[in-house]
Length: 348
Image 1 (cartoon, rainbow, N blue to C red):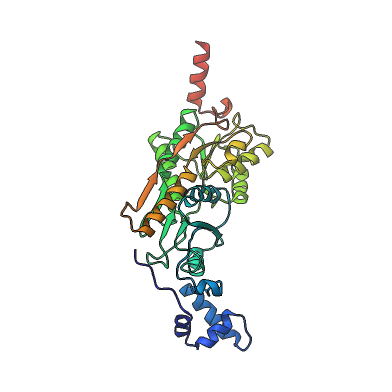
Image 2 (tube, rainbow, N blue to C red):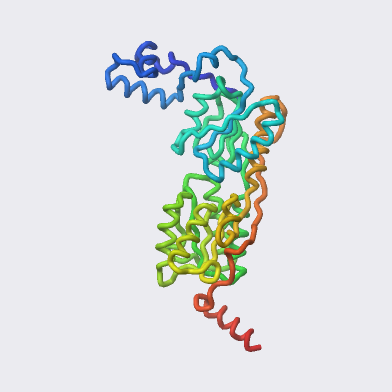
């Protein structure tokens, strides 16, 4: 992977059709530039990914002894990745910088332009939205939006994990299962939905109308969708959410509505963040080895920097962890055949 040349102020000036002095004024917030020109230059800066050096000292340092782990935001998923990356970095001779780039499209380009080559010698990018293969410094992507493709990548087996979670609910007797999906632009979210669909199809169970919803991994959106589903006359007996945060929020909504988990509703999540064990009841979930993924991404980055030949895609196994949030569906909401079988078995 060939590092891309760093974008210079002169590149911005040429693209915008203005002088370097004008770009300098815009970058440094000085007066004397028309509003229209400021907007033009800022647009080019955003397009090219230009960022001024963070300090004069960084200009004088051709080498840096720091690596970065760059995330969109600090939340439970990325926090576990950071822990894993730090465990490897601390014994490597490098220091580690954790940076939040903001949860907007293209955040990783802006972050790399700002930090790459000055403060950090390489970076682990957690769930990057889009990225060119030519980068300022060596990078490794963890769970990229577009899936394994152009960059060295670490991810987890989302399809199999989702399939096993759904099979677990089906084995308990659930047929009315709702799926709260993640972000439609994220490859792993597609794989989780595909795993859910496949398990339902293999069992010959149709997905009820309105039971497959997108929550974009947002707790507030998950609460809204869960409330809508659980107030239906034909409500689901189980919810499988594509991450733990939304699963826990759905479980809270059920309890607010007077439903007991798992007696009235079973809930399954995905990730196995620390909050999953602290939830009431403890959440059944699909475990991604989050800390191990962060650690392996850092090992891969160190190998890239050292020029070590190795595979550039590692997909890690997922594991169903059964806890207290799943059980059999309530008798009155089971399919007629299942309820009849249970009554016959009891009579025998």
